[in-house]
Image (cartoon, rainbow, N blue to C red; front, top):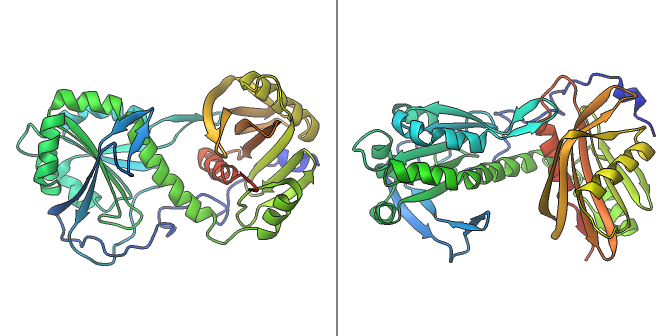
Length: 382
């Protein structure tokens, strides 16, 4: 079961097996949405912390505004890359809050190269007419100026929302499929420069999570576009009491009591699920040691590189979990790449769900995110 054959091979992502391009048609179809001429808008709903659409980030409640723009028609597909965010802002507003927003969106994933989750592209409000059809748009504005981005915002928001901004200092708003299909439009609007900078820092994580959620919804639709490996899913469910949603092309390479390995080739990416006796304390140290043990036993000596290891408390399969993110290496085959590893307990047993990729010479974060989405479909049979 060794990987010596592929560990020496420099895989290049093929067209079919690679990441979706900007024109992959992976978004939802547009229904009744705004026409190309819709620049004025009608305020649809105001959502606060007491309603269903609550957005909680770091246990803080954030005001969300949802806009409905007039008009109905077939929308063009959104332009721009999946990982590109066009930030529309005046130079003064960007100078005040831009770097806080950029820092939140351009998060780095070690693969071991530094790869950013999103790339921010700054554009002035005069170009909004062109960039409004982009897939990811972030509007940043303050209202204490009569022109520029503020004027644009006044044309989009109703009087009640503008008054709320004046009263409370700032709002964070979002809308899907406004001027294009598969579009996520977000706006951070504040009363003045001081409030804008304050909320850019406070809500930066929320902005990232909103764009990340939109990205993962697109990727999920893309990786399952050809269906699922129902036979393999049913086998896992009947034999082990848990299963994964496996996109077409994922194969179960090994399935035994206590260990299952699922793999997709070209480029190499895989998931393993291990389960066994629970430790007294399931923490990052135990998870790292156990992963190294699994690597030695099943993967010809894979091990964790300690210097880029990150430990987080998360939720996985509806349970409290520990997540390790970092780099795996195999000195024997001079191979390595990024991984994510989840450890949690269920009915007195410890479980590890681990994902990793081997994509030398190519960007790795998109492949890691794809296989991580598959891993997060893990569920127990009820």
